[in-house]
Length: 209
Image 1: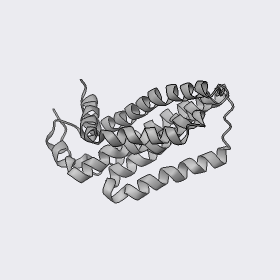
Image 2 (image 1 turned 90 degrees about the vertical axis):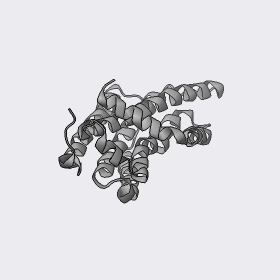
Image 3 (image 1 turned 30 degrees about the vertical axis):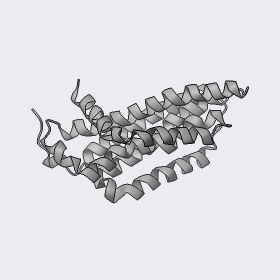
């Protein structure tokens, strides 16, 4: 197992005690959007996945886990990359649950979402990537406790601005979907580079052997 994978597993273990919240919140979100199955994944991505992606930062601040990380054979770079890998894992699991549920609900309600689902699914990824790409550097630079409100508000404002300015059309468009998907990847890559650059502990953390 790589060092980055170990960090991701460590994040899973630190969040595992709160599994009830991790299960209850998506169930509630899906219940709210029961009659709009095509919107289930976008809602989960914004209301659940982004919160879960930032949860390790909250636990780290609350339990002072940076003290533990400082004595583990981890570079700061591996720790930060592991956090981004955790975010990706959260979205993958969310999509693995949200897409089948939305399709099953659409079939159960005899509603056709084939014209809307592709854009909704890809937009979910792009909006999630936008949110995390803003949220993570703020957490990394200031910590969850100091930046909690800003890290929560900024992505919401950014997502709302993009949605309004873009006048999102749920009709499938191959080029538009490709740009959304690639744009999400580019945003996360840029966010990783920024996070590594502005990490206040980077210069003080010894390189692991």
